[in-house]
Length: 228
Image (cartoon, rainbow, N blue to C red; front, side):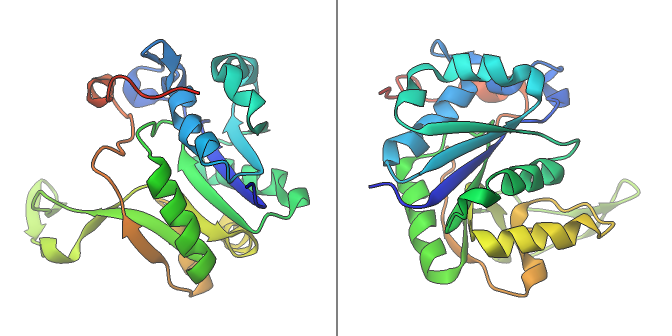
């Protein structure tokens, strides 16, 4: 049963590290990456609307790639900005009239997401106001300065964050509006949400929930993904 939840999918990046090819439109198993990304959100049956931020010149191509998915969910689009932060704020403002209870913000180039993670993030967001999936860091991490290793952070206290990240809509909108006037590069929406002073609950992510950044990343995609 659909609630007043909205999934915000960010897909306005320039894909510079993949050679300028729009990575959300790359075909995997005859379907575009954006199709695989959106499909698990549709299959949960929990979202009133799925809103995608992208450059306006790509909107029709995105619609064509989504195909039959549009029959199962309301798919809307909002113009993306020059940065991911600008794109998210654009998406949040575009859904403001819908007054959603919560919003899940997800990377358009992260097609490995599962329904279970989406549902877990929703559940804990409703309980705690904000939630994100994380996985333990496997490699040893170093801080570097001028090409020399400077510090050796303890791996046990480090985790890698993923998306979707869930938030109470009014809170994350307020934080994004505040962040707009702060001269700082925020790396993700949980960092922006920290401006509220509130805690963010964590759930277990998945090592398969990879974000496509380079062409080689596509080889990790699991074949035979279910379709509607």
